[in-house]
Length: 352
Image 1 (cartoon, one colour):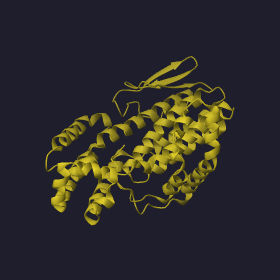
Image 2 (cartoon, rainbow, N blue to C red):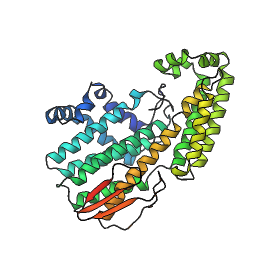
Image 3 (cartoon, one colour):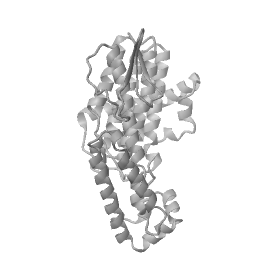
Image 4 (cartoon, rainbow, N blue to C red):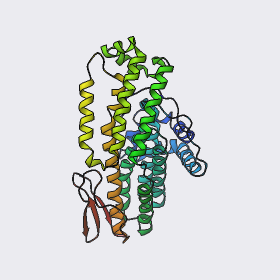
């Protein structure tokens, strides 16, 4: 995850959703229970969180018709507790989907899949890089649920059609890398502006502030904060301009730029004049960009397999965005398997 700084706020819909699981996610071991094989304990958790789960669904439905523009976006560096409730909700929906299949109700299972992808859409639209990262992780998690879903013998042709439409929407409504990194550049500018206007102890989470206070580079930073912040911002904006420009190319063609960025970060670290905040803002850029490419490849892999199994016309690129290689398709007796070079988890869809 990204480094942990204080949260400044975020969209109305996401705040309402987060509050539903703000307390529940703190229950020790609950997510582990939801991913276990203990049906009784899973049912206890699902019963306890049912009202909250349905409240989140209501908020997601309302957002489709009552979306309001975000007036205050989150800090680009935020606390882990800020996003934990979203993961908890997803864990609950995934467990609910699995239990629905076990109880012979694939209709309820596909609804869980649909709502989680709706949440991912809200996270991606928030304008926050960290929430885009959460959205990508959520989409990848739900692909595992989707794989279990299509393999279940209770799932019929119409259920596969529903999943196909969900994934098709994910592809057509994808937030582009250019948009994500342009917004992150703007987030960074706001972050530096806030650093100038506010005390550091109001901007930085206590655990990170304690870590920074022990570093010589940060103590030197405090001597001339305005000058150092201006230097940090210049480095950050310059790096993001290069990143945004690189987004005109697929991920597999950006490797030299990302290697150069990582090398520059390593060279800047450790010196007394280290651009502390620029490095905090830049150090996860490469991993986040790769995650977005992995998520895109995962969605497309499942979409292609479903498309071919349902006899749909081809509306996808055969060249993998992550690796630059073509997707590998196997038409076998009872279904379709799709994967790509370097992916250890092919997506398999039996004919229905």
